[in-house]
Image (cartoon, rainbow, N blue to C red; front, side, top):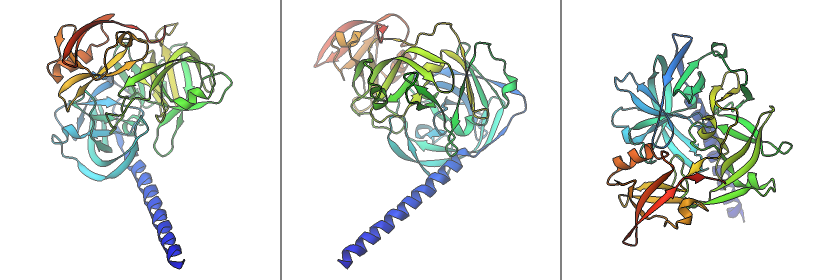
Length: 408
């Protein structure tokens, strides 16, 4: 009996030590990822941006006084990251390790790398840190990493999606806003500096916190149980095939995602609401307000003022988007492009296009290599229909697929 009690005592002690190490590492990690100093010579600066084939915002930056500009994804919902595929070009000093959680709810570990300097246009940051991870999303081989919260929180970011420019400043007074602007209060996590706002799916029900996440290309992502709690019979569609992935995620996970059409969402502590909003749900994912939402507005994000300012581009906003009903991916093991997922009751599903079948060509462009595929992805939303050839069970078939609204 004494031996058993001794073993239990040792196990409890080891558990306490492990918890202590975890808490210390987490605290130390947050401190490192929040470090950094900004030198800014002017009241405002302008940063041009473009889009990656995956739909993310790309900006150029010089790292450690390099002559070369490197492409970075701008991401308000994550720490700064360096991708391992380009680590041979610039040798960065190790500065510990960290634990993270990606958009699909999975945890991962990573090295922390020291960045001496980062220059974006006329902005000069020093003494930064970034996590180093493997990043396997298609067509981002020339992207060096993510510029995340550790950099973004030093500035106010005014993003003009119509003109593909970002204006940054340290003071909100340096911007002019439309009279019809919407001001939404934000909450900042005092450790990680993530910013979030609250939404309701019905005007009088319980609010849900959602992260402001420019790194998520969707409109809104929620845990499915949050949608089901309201006991409303929302329209829904399953996503069949391989699920969407986050940083350091398993690319072969079977999809448990669905689209729901929400009647309305109401923003907490404001009178603002939007109608007919598609939302993607998953069992374990994070609650995220994504890039697809913000592109309907000139968007200003301020950590200083704890404020999100939205200036609508149109009087009547329509968030219901058109889709062909399928997604593709580069299968690195098989060295071919395949059908990754199909949305239930879509053009692609009604044509019975097989999952995981090989994509031979799209609009008569042969998918002969990754470069050709990435060029297609960069222009994939052009046109109301496409012609696709696929190979399945040694048979090649051709389909004409029309783009339709996700929810009719």
